[in-house]
Length: 405
Image (cartoon, rainbow, N blue to C red):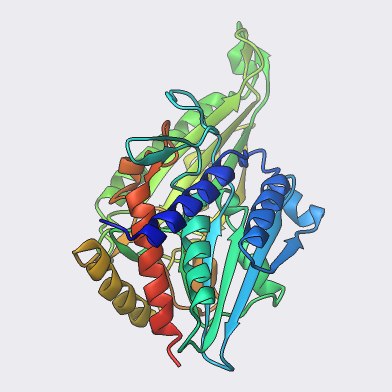
């Protein structure tokens, strides 16, 4: 891809914008994201945008295990009517973890890529969407409608005080939405997730006389056996939505016990159950809870508590989505030289809150062909500058089509 001199100058400005966002930590957990929102808001204002700052009240934030959230909204109106199109990206990121060869917050540039936590998921789309909108603002001829930037901060905690909060507080009512994604596919559906915490309570006893207690770990083992049998059963199911595959279940965390020589009286497990678009999360939760309780039914001295942590319903394809897909595909073909497929992915995002509100939504933004290629949620996460430039051009052209007077 080649650029005119003006394009190169604009891209250099966009790259510096992204680097500035990557350099400010916004790990979730712990989810203290207001400082990043302040930096992002200032950078947007320096580009000439009017930025609305919407702090979420502390009780709501703490409910979802976070410390501070300030959602940013930019609204640019063109003409006197037309559709409202929302562009949503999240600024919270998973903690860096180990194995990095780059500074996770250094925003280092090497080999045509920017490295750092959030460079791909999804601070890159703060840049993609802001600079696409900036291009519209500078050349507004022939446009009729409104573009909103929704920059939110709780995707890693479920999006409940991000997009969902903005919609429920009547701060936005878009007709269409585009949410953070990658450049080589238009995502029209994704799976959901149910997170359960299972607490197994028994009775402690001396290890020399285990029969005098009620072994919570032995009961937990029976529950694990039931869960892994369920995993095997789920492998035999294939979603009718291409790209989703089968439902999945994983036990990701286990804790408990008192000491080596004590029968454990309490074991806690966290379970992740991925939902296909055809499944109903509430029904899945009821069925899984019943399986867990049945695994230890009648065990003397054992009590079970199943508590929902997160229920994220899948992103489902709504009528009207085809307009977004066709428009993005047309312009992506012009920019990338190939038509990105409309597909589904086996993960979940906060974009689902838009479809839950009846708003046709797709995922499209800056990035490579796969999460693995970008090292998203892994060490040395990065985004190629060429993909950032391409996605910005595609989004700009898509918005011009959607807002044609």
